[in-house]
Image (cartoon, rainbow, N blue to C red; front, side):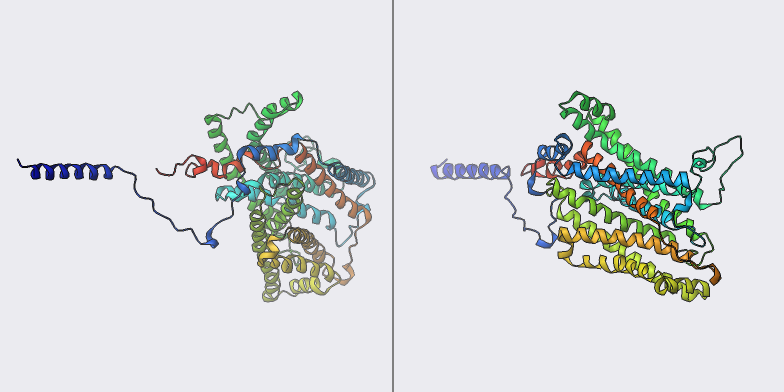
Length: 496
């Protein structure tokens, strides 16, 4: 064989080896275009905070001494709570006459406050249960405080329907409120929506408490492991139920949390629907309407989110949690308030339309009396707060400016209290005969009992942030890039 042929064969062999080697080399990188700025979502934890930083920031709130402002706030709240219980004792010892109730307005301030506080408690279950089932990850930074707010609001609400009965000691007897066989054969009226309230509110409070506690268990174990005080370590260990952080524990935890979320979701709709039945099943003009159940549910979510913002915006600033409770969280809650506020405004207009379209002169007069009668100031305060103020959230600046959002959230809660007052009092204070007309005016006992209920609410909330993690540590960690196995920070390599 000639040298030229050998050389040609060698060149062909070397080219084949090179081609074979190139086939096993890493594929060339493909430069992916950056997504448009409008489609890039703000992260749920800002500044790339580590998992350890999240634990220290949240657990440190209840591990370190409280800031200087906490004690004055607690003393004022505790004083308001003491005032409320003192006035309740005065009511029981003296009689319901110390309130401004009288014929024809024999429901007024007390039931207004009951419906108001039940509505406040709705956002906690919605944020925790409904958004969890819909896999909305932005709930993780706000659900714990919202759940606690639900429990405290239900505690405040439960006081008013018991003390408004007059003979409070009967409410403690078996069979008076809750059906229970007894020697006196006292049975409640099962056809009364007031009894339905007892079942609905007690069920709602029980399931909300279980849901809140189950979510706390992993974080209580974190505080147990970090405790430097033996008493605190023992208490956190007791309530964390021996949490081991194992794969089996997490599997059981997630199953239990999912089941409780499924049980809680119908309660969001049922509880305030049943509260609305207190009015809707009656024959009183202004109450007897089928729009009340969805209207009350939308209003409850509306006021509940308002209270969540009222509490979380100061807490976010005072404890420097801007990287965990971000502007995006606040903006999304503002959008929920805008949506539910629009539903409430639609319901207000539909009530007037049906009163006119239905042809009942008594129904039409009840709504004219609301807008232009003696309580016109309450009606137009309600319209201003509940219909006009939420529409400011159409503007991005209004949703992103914290002090402005906080002020609007307070206005929303004021408006929702006026809504309950308008529904109850203006439908009762003028009966069918002018001789039965009256004007309800609250007494100082009415006013300060309601003010004191805020003391009870804030006392419980301040104790909550003092001893328990106000934000779900484990859930916030789960939405960080470090928890995502497909993210480079979570373990994914550059090439798969």
